[in-house]
Image (cartoon, rainbow, N blue to C red; front, side):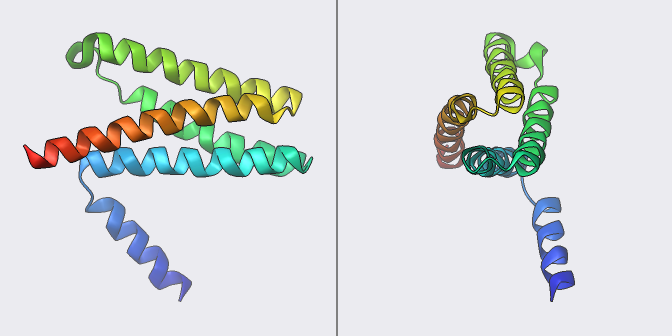
Length: 125
């Protein structure tokens, strides 16, 4: 059964549009950040580190896909936000304080909401 689910997940990612993949990345970063917050609150250091690492990797991937030639000022602003988020992850991992992770989560959720609305507008046009 696990193998079938894995095949389904792989197919859904491979057949997804660019916009859907971007939203899926945000969803993953949000999910792992929430898990890291929970682990930090429960003082589960290893779980906190693993989930921060996963969220961090996703945010770095989002940052790496920015096209500054096409995106201009928007790309620059997104890069600054991604760097803020990764800094919050580092501080949260070093200190164990979930406050930093909550700050990162707020930014991620705001960006996700904005992109979701932008994708919906794009589909309507």
